[in-house]
Image (tube, rainbow, N blue to C red; front, side, top):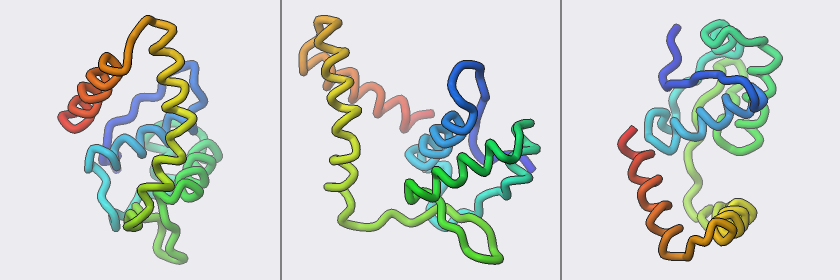
Length: 128
């Protein structure tokens, strides 16, 4: 079974983190929609050629993040987004945003530069 979204494992970052990121990106791009039945750990592992324990770790992280739901006896599914969770989402982004601002300032970039780069990144994500 072919995975319904692109993922290329590369050396450097932990494999399970790369899987989590790829799934999050596929959801953001609309490639994986709420209710989609996700591949099994075994199938995912075979498609990627990685250890099933690594895939299980990624699945557990995706469940913890609320991206995957486990339905007993049926498998894993992409979770529906809960309305009203935006405030929580923004709060979860705060550490990343602070890192972005610190790095941008270190490069001599201002708020307008960061906004422009963010808008461009958002557009690239939606076009991929």
